[in-house]
Length: 114
Image (cartoon, rainbow, N blue to C red):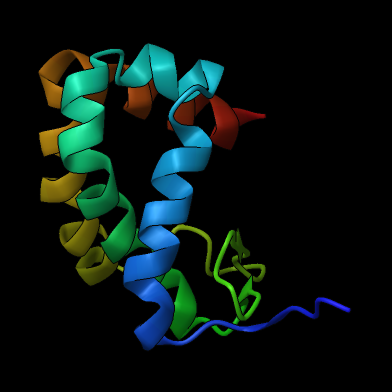
């Protein structure tokens, strides 16, 4: 039986790979970052800091094979800190570029309003 467990920092590289693969064809991510060559080159690097930030909150789960992850942010922590944003900013910008960053920020703003 496969059991979920809390992810650790040692899991981050494998989870970044799994998340990059999982979201490669996702409709929203495909709109934010449509260049698949760029995605393949940079998505793992973009998901690694985000995963590491979420692990700090203690609600990131995986299995021993690290085939996937569930990243949860408890109430009051989903925005993170300014330091968290700085850790994620550059890798995400490298993945999405200027236009994709604008689209991604629009998605975040719409989510916040909802």
